[in-house]
Amino acid sequence: QVQLVESGGGLVQAGGSLRLSCAASVRTFTLYAMGWFRHAPGKEREVVAAINWSGGSTSYADSVKGRFTISRDNAKNTVYLQMNSLKPEDTAVYYCAAAKGTYLYTQVRLYNDWGQGTQVTVSS
Figure 1 (tube, rainbow, N blue to C red):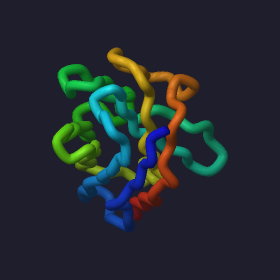
Figure 2 (cartoon, helix red, strand yellow):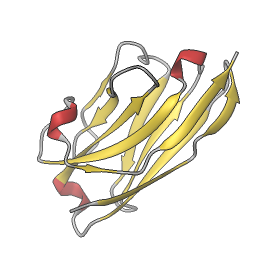
Figure 3 (cartoon, rainbow, N blue to C red):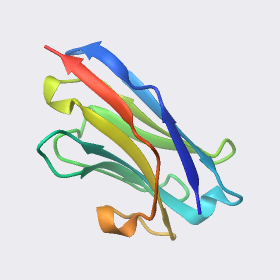
């Protein structure tokens, strides 16, 4: 099991930036692909970005391409989500999650370990 703790959320004006971090407590971080997801009121949880074990492969939701960047530092057991040009529609609780395996996973159901979430609010 992977213990995940997110940080970095907050309130920001439209057009601003935030950087989310997710620290993983696990013996071998490189056994896991990682993902960032978000859940807005009245909507289903959706994948925002995903990254494979090495960081060599990434995937993004169409709504965030060109604005968000996912990365990981395996030496620090941490995954990041840099969010630029934020829009009010990005407002949600953001979660990081871990999926054991060597591929790039973009489906919610493939992720077994989840953090507690961090609120991101973008004001217009």
